[in-house]
Picture 1 (cartoon, rainbow, N blue to C red):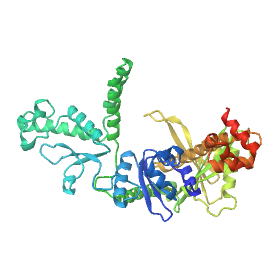
Picture 2: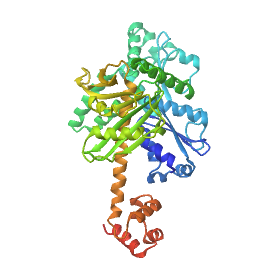
Picture 3: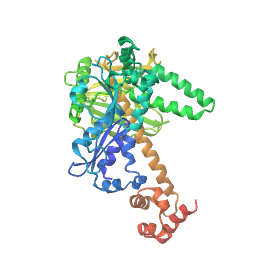
Picture 4: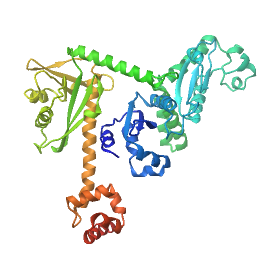
Amino acid sequence: MNNQIERKLSTLPDLPGVYKFLDKNQNILYIGKAINLRKRISSYFQKDIYDRPRIIQMLPLVDDVDIIETNNEIEALILESALIKEYQPQFNSDLKDDKSYAWIYITTKDEFPTVKIVRTLSKGDYKRGRLFGPYPSGYTIKRVYSYLRKLYPFCTCKNKDCSSSLYFHIGLCPGPYAGAISKGDYRKNIDSIIKFLSGKQQNHIKRLEREMKEYSKNEEFEKALQLRDRINDLRYIGQDIDFTYYNDSQSYESRREKARKSSFAYLAIELGISNLRRIECFDISNIQGKNAYGSMVVAIDGKLDRSKYRIFRIKGSDTPNDFLMLKEVVGRRFKGSEDIPDLILIDGGKGQLTSLKAIVPKDVILMGISKGKYLKRRGKKLIDEFWILKNSEILRIDLDSPELLIDLRDEAHRFAISYFRRRSIKESKISILDGIEGVGDRRRKKLIKSFGSVENIKKARYEEIYSVIKNKEVAKNIFNYFSNP
């Protein structure tokens, strides 16, 4: 794994999306989807990935990773399919041909609409109805389809002959062509299915959850598991998507880009900043002042630029003092730097902004975001409060569209915490070697460089350790240390 990939892994978001592995010429080797991009991509560079032959062949060729964030898992699923068909990557075996994921299609323009499972449609058919999905397996979609039909029966009778249909006689077809249901009542069933598939089924899910808990309480675990699967299916199909059956990857990315720029432009108008382009957000992570780090995340024109993220190891304090730590981090940020942001956002309120007034250049807007004292009625969550430095005064301001700033604050916090955890794990593993006689800083680095991790050193034979250390006594100490825990 090269340094570029290692750095990218540290900045990946815990969000759904699609990832591409690229070679040194930027050719796409593999395209995949993920519910959590950071966890999924990082898994490729763990030792246990080597039980997959195709991955073993691919990884030495990987020079870079590119990601596309999506709103949810379903959009990632569709986008992955579109990209694989478009680029035909060498190491993808699925979805290269005309096969696609299955969808639920409702013929809303018909007099008595029906509900179908489809994999391909002509564009004319698509415009005549509503499409929901996609679903990654035939088993999943059939399970959802059957469940919906029991809740809200619909007609699939050929030749408009309900009386001879088995589904009519077992209650799964309400018999619109046999006069057993009025056109208005039949439409209510179809409208209920559309609402269900559009995500408006929270009360129904809550009822199923109560039933599931009751089954578990009575130790009827098989029934509880069946309900759990049904709940997961319903949550999955209820996700809103901004990507349809006929979209390609370019149109999807173009729409997201347009929406992002529109949101960013509106924020600039709200803040009264005519030339807003670069925003930097800072956060502090520490445990009682120890091992403190400051994170800086960057958004340019509203889009996160992970190549410009920075981590500052705080040097000046071993006591928990956010004000001093922020002063140190922001002061170091501006020392000798030519890339000056238009706006700096701090995870904090009045006190934090006051401590930075003298450090931040006069032409840079300084803002803070803090948890407020008032609760939202729905969900009872604290409302975020926003602060701005104007004419040497720190004022609280209300924003109609603060989502971008909230996302930046959350990203800065995530980046600081994830780096803090990685360093803690790395340092705790390295410290094991420090307890072995004869292993100093130089030999410890050689061991880690050669074996990759302490776990691999534990598994190494004496001869392998000696080939790195070149000292029989020390190699024996290391081997015995791990052989006799």
